[in-house]
Every structure is written in structure tokens, then in C-alpha cells.
Image (cartoon, rainbow, N blue to C red; front, side):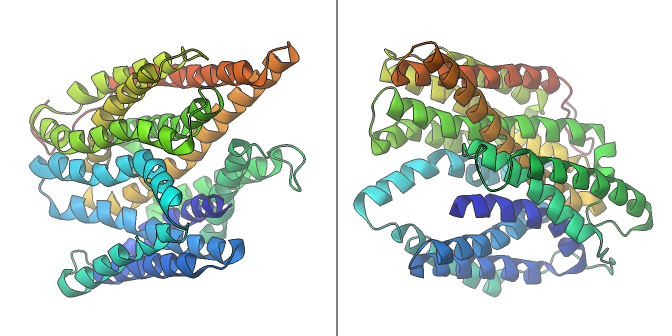
Length: 423
């Protein structure tokens, strides 16, 4: 429930960050973001129960949602084009590896300490970053007098929030019998989102858009964002399904399942800086095409997992997927934002962050829904729960494999931005 609030809050706040980055100084935005993150972490650490924990996670999410677009916009503004791949590679360590190794680290902490220590251990890091930013950070952008469209704000919150809430409800398996039908937030969110998009397109030429969607007029940006959406669907879908398979089919303990995922997550982190350097030298397609193939190989190999599968086989499948994602994140981040004019960096960062959140929720919903339907069909045919779960996870990963085939097709259209050396 607390993580549900985190996803929902980020989906609501991130679209607004493009406007905030236009109106405020870099220091103001950074101090606000890290202050909210640290405050939310403290609230979570002191939480006596679920209610305050949810409040703390929401405050945390507000800070995180502001921080990521700020980071991307600042890098694009300060780093010269020929070095952006290397810098984005370092950033990708955080963005891509954190979700991959998070379950492992959480499992270790929960196995040894009280759950509140997950927040007590993070709090000094947040406070340290806040102090360092206060002492060293300088303003790198010039604020503009961008008007705030008061109608767009609730439209954005209701549209993106409704979509992510509906998808998350499906992904958590709460789609039936709840107080709110699953289809209602999805339909409301989808309709409101269409209205929001039409309004932004109308306001953009006047310089009054809350989220300037003219970024999608740039072909490289559009293709890279679509591929990033596919990546996040695959990553979050795998993060949910693979532990279910390892625990419910192979009978592994949660800590053991988390440790099995650790090598792939660490490999992603180790590869990220090297991938950035290769991007600076060789361009995007030499990375995203083989990267997409690795992702497809990883997901299709996971679609072969069964009741008798050896643990080393699961490890190899996860490493294949991790290699592919490591080869994709840095080129997609750099190519997408680098293809935009400087005045659209902040909006491009907000769009990219929003797509990541919505795609992550959609990936969880899709993988879990396919798995649940297959489990139901197998059990109705007389299979026991273990064999039915194995069949369900195979079906989920097969769905991911089909998505990866689309990713391979899209990878041929990714280009390095024109202000960098030729492909």
C-alpha cells in the first residue's frame, strides 16, 4: 500500500516538474526536492504504523519526482554533447540498478533488522546530499515567467494518477471485488489524459503549457521514449514475476531469491559507465540493437522456466536480461534528451520520467494479469498450484518476449543527437 502511494504520487508530480524547472532556480528546486525526500524518510522511520508510513512515502515521492527531472535537465545543460554518454552512464547506475538490487538489499535488512532501519539507513544519505547541495550547488538555469495553467494541474493529476492507480490495482491482483471497479480509474484516467494532451497542444504555441508536448515532434525523442517505456515494462514485470516463480515454484526463501538477483543488478551497475563511453565513441544503434536482442533473449529464456529448472538457469536468464537493459538505458536517456532544443530539456525530462512511471505500472499489470489468467486456466484443468504457477509465469514472460520483439524493431530507428559526432 505504501509503495502504491509512492508510484501514484510520482505519476502526479513528475508532469508538473517541467513547469517548476522553468520558473525556479536550480538551488531552489534541489533544496525543495532533497528536503522533501529527507523529511519523508524521517516520517517513515518514526512511523508507528501503516497510516504514517503512507504519508511518509508520499512526501518522499514528491522529492524524488522533482529530483530526477532536475538531474537530467542539469546534466543536459552543463555537460558538453561529446561527454553526455559517459555522464548519463553514471546516472543510469542509480536509475536502472536501484530497482534491480532494491529487493535484495531490502531482504537482507528485513532479515537482520527491524523494517524501520530501511529508512534510518537512508536518512543520513539524504541529509548529506542536502548539506552538500546547500554548500556547493550553484544556479545553472535562468528562470522564466512561465504562467501556470490552473486547469492543466488537476487534469494532469487525475489523468496520470487515475491511469497509474488502475494499472497498479491490476498489478497487485486487487482487480475484483474491491470498492472501486478496476476499469473505472483506467477509463477516467484515459479520458482525462486525452483532454490534458489536447489542452497542452493548444497552449504550447502560446508558451503556457504545463507539460510541453512539442517534444514528441522530434522523431529521435519519440522513438527513444517508446523504447524506454518497453524497457521499464520489462524491468518491473520481471521484478515482480521472477521472485514469485523462485519462491512459489522453486521453493526458495525470500532472501535467497533476492540474492540470486544481485549479480544481474551489480552487472548493470558495472556496465553503465562503459556503455556511456561506447555511446560517446560509436553512437546509439551499436548499443540499442544488440541490447534489445539481449532483453528478448532473457525474456524468452525465462518463458522456458519450469518446476524442475536449475537455479543456475534462472541466474543466466536474469543476467541476459540485465546485460540488455544496461546496454539500453544510457543510449535512450542521452539520445532522447539530446535530440531536443535546450528550452525543452526540462519538459523532455518530465515526459521521460512520466513514461517511466506509467510504463512500470503497466508492465506489472500486464505481466501479473497474464500470469493470473493462465494460473486460473491451469488449475481449472486440474493442475496443482505449483505447476499452475510455473505455467503462469511462463505466460507472463512470453508476453514480455513479444514486447521485446517490438523493441528490436524500434531500435533500428534510434539515432545519436545531431550535435554529437556522427554514427
